[in-house]
Image (cartoon, rainbow, N blue to C red; front, side):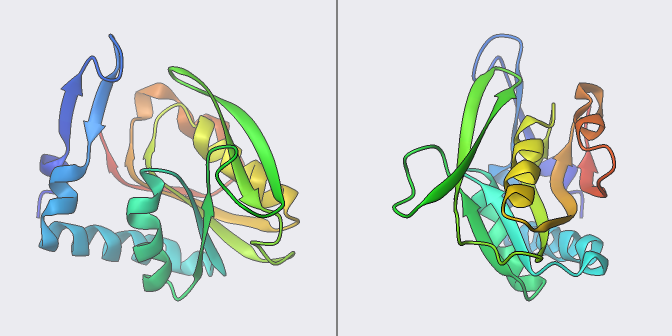
Length: 171
């Protein structure tokens, strides 16, 4: 199945000059969704994660399914002020602005192996922030997993020293 053919490009969204990669057609196709999760899990299985962590909102789309396929727990990282318990936080830069993420301080067991997952690796800001959250929880980043990578934006360089897998690489 051509998974890349199910990624729709939306020019100038969310602002001029950004070519948004819309994964919703892939998510809407049951066979494509099943194949994507299965292939992501196959790439990540050797990393033996205890948890999968993903950031809202798009990371939440495949993160829990990937965690189930890996028989791992799922941990969510949310925008500041959205979690009700004591949190740890990081701020980071995106290709079109600044943002922050928080994690419940007790969400990850110290020493655990954590797979960082996001739908897209562009400049690497979100993934790097997730890695910093994992490390601030005294856990280990087992690796990073992405549905789509945009190699031209150099995000993999921000993850230097960490294993990273992307199911699809798009221009």
